[in-house]
Length: 427
Image (cartoon, rainbow, N blue to C red; front, top):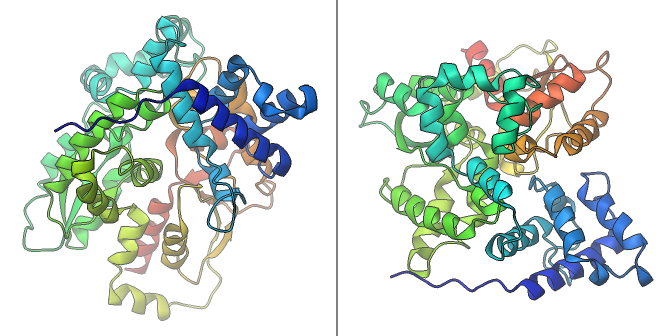
């Protein structure tokens, strides 16, 4: 039986958002994170008595479009939790506003098509992968005539660097590896996410190779998208249908198997939104699924062997390599501890917060180019000068990592790859 979710009422959403803006205007602790907060404060400054409730719907919409849902403001916000009388969560409020705009026809036909395109990798991905040579010819050269034509048709930025489409999908590669053979050994269910499924991503394949080399039996749970962009673009009904399918698929896996989500941002999205958007009949099942979700860093920490621990304890005291770690807001304390423990005591690690924020598909939209540039500059300013910084930077996030590397010249490597290299060196 389908559960009827409450219909979001526009005036209530806009009033609630204005209430949050009023709290943020008094705090301003997040002003340096992204374009959202400066734009709010500038708009409120010219209003009578600085009242955010006087912002027009258009002004609220503009602010909402600046959010790329990295979660950094939620992590930093002091107006959350049991010690606060507020529960500020602007990204979630922006999702509610996007749903209102989608349902009430605020988007143009082209905007609706762009939203659908970016939130439908299960439809676009197989086509692009099957025609990978043509896809890469069309997409891999920014600011060319063909990219400007694609922009006119789809609303995708002509200057955005799009990852290379893989002719062999991750699921096809998994089947070729015969990952299901070791059924008598501890299992791991794989949720590759659409990025690993359709784009050239050696990191994900290296993780699987490492797990199987440790004697772990890897099983591909599903190749479906996590639905983050459906939710963020206001297609909430479509996302709730996806949640129903995902919970059903994950529930078919053995209850003891950890589900490794290859993308940290997808993991954070599922942990945050799977239960609130599932039907009442699936609530307990969804909660059990969420409890089994793991990042690659967490899985490596859980599967750490005694031999590896002994190798670290017996390692030389000679100074090891230096490393800069840029954890994303979606990477919690468990991921940070797993990484810091995994690299060993011989490595000098410097952790810098607020420089690992992810922009995701938001960075691909035409019209966001200047905002992307400013956000990358904000991250770059938090890093030490290139001449004095460590040679290797550990950071996840495919699109924004490439943008940050282009802006700074740093060699940016996924944290999971760093751990794989460390383990390989110890062995």
